[in-house]
Length: 171
Image (tube, rainbow, N blue to C red):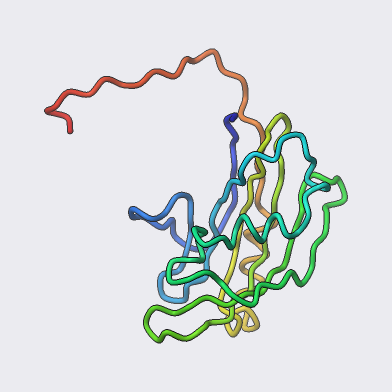
C-alpha cells in the first residue's frame, strides 16, 4: 500500500461521527459524496477493470450503501474513460432500503475512479442523491464534485512513521 493525496470540492459539510471516513453530505436530503478505496487490483489498469468490479466493490453487503440491507436494482447506465485514460466515470442507478419506512428508495450516483501511478488500488469518489432530487438539480451538484476530484501518489518523504507512545493519563 502507498500513500495517496486525494481532493475534491463539495457544497456539503464534512460528515463527522464513528461511521464516516471522508464523506461530505447534507443530513437533511442525503445528497453527498464519499471517498472509497478498492481492494488490491495488482497491475491491472483502470481500463482493464470491468464495470462489475466497481459495482461489487461499492455495493457489497458491507459497502457504504448497505446500512439497512444491500442495494438492489443496481444498473450501470453509462461508463466512460477520460480522454487521458486516467479517470473512469460511471453513472449508476440503484435502490436502498429506508430504515424509517422499510421501503426501497431509488438513488442515482456518479462515480469517478483513478489508479494513482504506482498504486495497486483504485481511489474513487462516489456522489449520489435520491432519484427525485437528482432530476431537480442534485445531478449538477454531484457532477461538480465529481469533476473536481483528483487523486495522486503522495510526494516522497524522508519522514519515518513511528507510533506515538501514549500515557494512561492521555487516554
